[in-house]
Structure formats: structure tokens, C-alpha cells
Image (cartoon, rainbow, N blue to C red; front, side, top):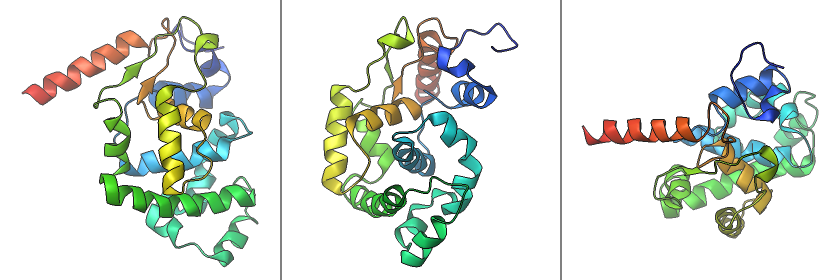
Length: 204
């Protein structure tokens, strides 16, 4: 339980790390290219695990993977892979380590065509956040037609660990989709206010 009266999505009450992530990052529209890449890699690493586990290892993961700089990761060789697999601070799964390297290289292919991961992702919504406004957490879908399409395209570019479920979770994480439940303080009302503020600033 939290120590304040703020209503949050139920999963955010699991522990302080989850609560902080929920309040500050999850569902907030992101246009930072490095973070967009980082979160795509991390969502793939989460496969079969819990996001709480990723949050607990966040600092060591960022350090081990050079701050998720795609240019540096794309240059990793077998010696670097062997080094990473000895690091207890990361998810020591060879497939996932290799996928990070593969995805860094695929990232540059995608950018050649679309300019950036940011412009690619937000082109699916015309730059506007999709707000789910679900009554309960249980009603949230695990995939959507958009995540299906993005998954197919990312695989075409050579990305790994980008099934539709992982992609949908990624879209939630970087705020292309806002799936805070309706009663959550960070839900539809907050999303609409943020959108109105952004549009007002753009109009000036």
C-alpha cells in the first residue's frame, strides 16, 4: 500500500520502485530517442520475467549496456558478449544479450527509412496519444491491431523479441498508449490535460 491517498493502477502498489515508475514514466508520452531505444530493448529482456525485476536491475543494466547507446551496442563482439554473460547485474540470457546487439543494428536500418524511432512510432497515431481509459486493470488488452502491425514491421527490419505482446507493453511504457485505469490519477483526465497543454504551447 502507498502512504498517500493518490489512486493508482493496482500494479503500481507492489513496491516503491513500481510506484515511482508508474508515476513518473509509464504512459507518459516519450520522444527521447535514446529512451525509446532503451525501453524497446528492456521490454524484450522482460520476456518471461517481471518488470519489477527489470526495475531492480535498471542501474546495472544501463551501466553494462553503455547507457543503451545503439551505436556502441551495435559494435559489440563475442568478447563483449562473454563479458556481459558474466555480469550478475543483468539478465544473463545469451539470446537476449545477442538480441540487444541485433536490435541495435536493426535500429539503424529503421532510422534510414523513417529518420528516427520516435517519428516511426508516433506516425501510427498521428502524433497523438491513444488513451485506453479502462475501468479495471483486467480489461486491458495484451495486444492491439497497432502492436500487431508494429511487431510485423520490426521483425521485417530484423528486430528480435518484438512479438505483439512485447510491443504493446512497450507502447504503454513510452506513452504512445496511455492505459492507466480510469480511476487512476494519471489516467484519462491527466492525459487530456497534458495533450491540451502541449497543443496550446505549439499554437503559440
